[in-house]
Length: 111
Length: 119
Image (cartoon, rainbow over all chains, first blue to last red; front, side, top):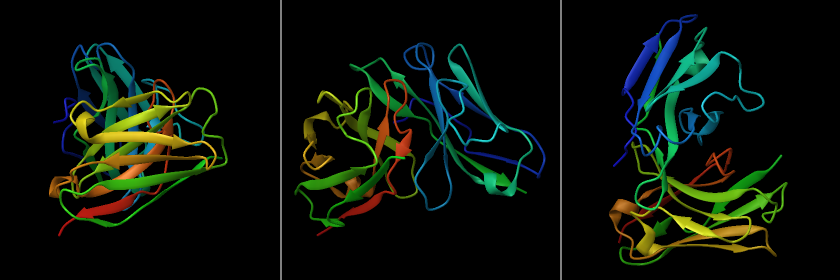
């Protein structure tokens, strides 16, 4: 059902940079800001990036977000073992009277 | 620091109604500018936004679930609730409540509660 497409998996060794893509359309990412969430195993999601590139208080500056056209990206610099988690992008979608959509999710593995 | 906590039955029979409550502490649910959402996650799957109720009481629902959902607020108890009618096994999920603003659903989340639909 998700209209935001992410790669199912990504991986890297400690210290590396990992990038996760999020592909949408003109009705969602093309018009609205993108948020990113981190979900550690067995826990609730946590807001990681809001409004394309803003980090909430307490989020390390290793995490950064960007948006261009109908796509967005999350970058993790200096990958750490505790970054192993599922990551979801999300945005408001203006179709069907409007609704909030999450991406398909990306599992990040630290090798 | 706001805290949210979901509560409700962990087992619901098919065709019955799922009812969950989210208790909010550390902030008033009537605080201006916040939107109080329900989100669910089926086992092994991704996240699905269910809907929200605003600080002013306006509701907004996922079109795919709209015919079966009611989200309401009890300001005296500082709680908001989800009612999902006519449940099936496909409604088995971890249900989260969350607080957000006009741009962001889920700046703060509850720990989630697993609801299983089974006879």
